[in-house]
Length: 243
Image (cartoon, rainbow, N blue to C red; front, side, top):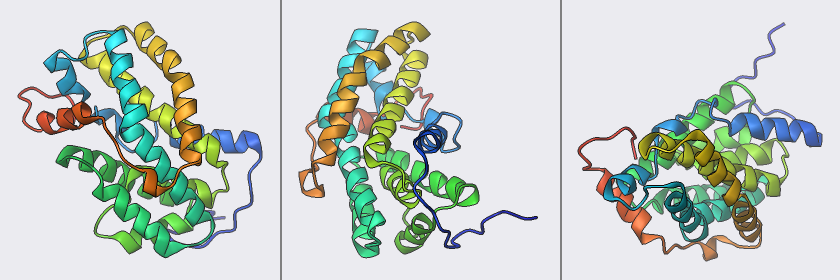
């Protein structure tokens, strides 16, 4: 029997058990999920060459600022907003949040980072797990892609996953990917990288919790050095990463 769900077909989804919800989040946000996250450094590669990030301590400080004042906070707020309107079936509001998330990217490479990962996530989810609202949204914003945090949020809402856990899992994956980039670029030892993720875990939880109480009107950042790093990376002579 063919059990494949064609792209865009509406499917009935009930709230999964806690274990199934966790399994889905771990799968979607794992390094093995085909969104190409490992090819992006969010400007970190330039910060390494510039001398801003040279150790586990400076990496942790750099990522702390991104979480508190940069894309970490903004993405989590947009994720929460998208999750709620997707769950309510408010497609026009969801389209506006998706457009805002894509427009807010501060550089060409950061726009690529969010857009390309979002597009890959839509394709992978549609071809495997199914997510009718996400497929509908992708059609509405085309030819632009769905920004990555909005894509994750919409799929999570389609599958009735818990919002708090989705936001925290998204930020954890974001940090883990940048730590992996630093392990290669600085370079750092694997153990130092894991300690950085451990040390950032309480902040990840706090930023995710704050995002649940915020709205798109609260989106804004002051992590200018990270934004400039992503711009400078565009002309960096030797590069391992796409951003």
